[in-house]
View 1: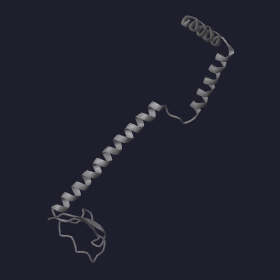
View 2 (view 1 turned 45 degrees about the vertical axis):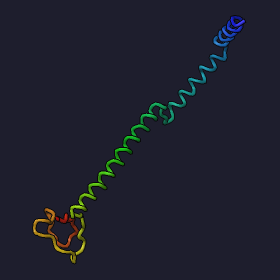
View 3 (view 1 turned 30 degrees about the vertical axis):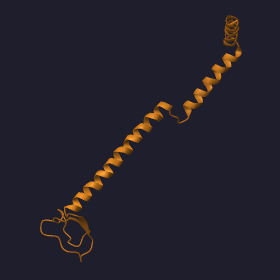
View 4 (view 1 turned 60 degrees about the horizontal axis):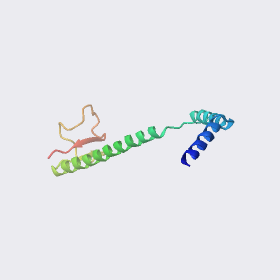
Length: 115
């Protein structure tokens, strides 16, 4: 009995392959492929790869942010802080602390406080 159904299924498949329906299917696939190629689409594989790259980049960014926080905490624990002096009423920097090329003492500059 199974061979009878398998035989009928084979004949139906053969009839479909030689029928205009198969040609229509091929033409529709070709038109859709051409239409999709005009759109700015990516394959699922390319999307998955970019998603993995993004996940790795986010993980690296989070690790770097943690490291910056740790380094800032370590610097603060050592007594050094980074401050900006923007007004002329701020304490004047010591002789070696001014930025190279700074000619105007009232100009804003960054000073690294030393412990």
